[in-house]
Image (tube, rainbow, N blue to C red; front, side):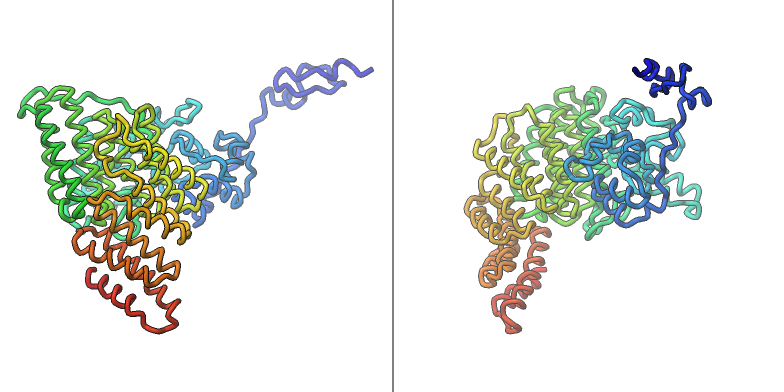
Length: 566
């Protein structure tokens, strides 16, 4: 019969002791008198120079980051789990695409564990520092890992130096760190700064400065990444930080009772009425007809916020007007192909919606940020923004607002080729649209109808290469659109012309493209004209494929009209 000593365990480490061992501890623990230290692996610096790793970070594809880092070091999933604090099973699902890492705290935990350089991530990571070397305890608490452990001592903010500091020390002493983080003169670019009323007005003021002309200054977004045209995109991580703080920060009461002219609810009604009128003008005539007026109107609303005399209820209403007006100004800038300014307005709108305590206005700003993201080839960011908007309006009766957000989400999924996700999102959006507007749906979602659903379905189909489905849905969209939405009609028709061209129906493509040119001659929209440039490219390609070198009169006529319009 075996000895009972066989089941004895080490009093220190718990391992099973040998039947011949009569001691209370195993040999290893007797030698060290402590649990042996486990040396964790490290990720060499050369890994972060790999183009694939950098691309995965830009796309916020952390499953791909984990997989590529493991292959390049190499590491096991167990090693990455030990470094990041995430379980091995979770990492396995993350790498297979069955899970998405979107929670800001867990993202920070993952990237910090791998030792990701701060200059590759536009989100505060433990170990980075302020320009003054100070520690932001508030930021550390906000970005602590999910387990509740605060990051190690040191700032959790990206390296930032004030422009005035750089000017004093001289350009010769400036380093790459000077532009790693958002400039403190652009407060809306730093999501972990307090979401106070002063920050709100500074953000709106900075947004107005960034939109002084069509030719945007390079410094409009200090730490954003250059993209097509004059756009500069926040990284997905920074966008996620905005979403996180918008939904979790406490709201500071907005009221001013000393000095300034008295602002009333009736004045807020008039200011909102002007915003609504500009919105209707834009839908019918394009952003070129209203952009300057919108900037002037936002400046007026901002002046009332800064210098008016009002109580708490009027302050919230005024902040709501500012949120709506800034969102519309951002939309007009986006339609005019001024993407940096559009982003600045929309981030300011998000702050104003937070002050107004109106989740619906914030969701509206996020829906525009989603469009801005997928239009600039950042589909994952579009999905994050749309999903965050939906999360914040749960509990409200807003079927049309939720349908809008779902169509934005579907467009992001379409660019990623996620067909099942597209089908689910658009199917749910269609069901919500049929319900009609809910009692809490905002008045600025007046345009949501069946035609919009068909148009977004067609656009998603076109992005996924399903030209036949796109043609069919575009036809339904044209029949169901609100007749006042001339620019939207032009955009959907332009995409329909592209679908016809790609399907080989050159005559239909030219006829539909001709309708768009006629609309574009009346509607002042740089975005619509840019769509026409894409139409011309697809028509020329279709003509080369189908005419075998012979001239096609319709294609030649259409491309000439588009060139003259451009």
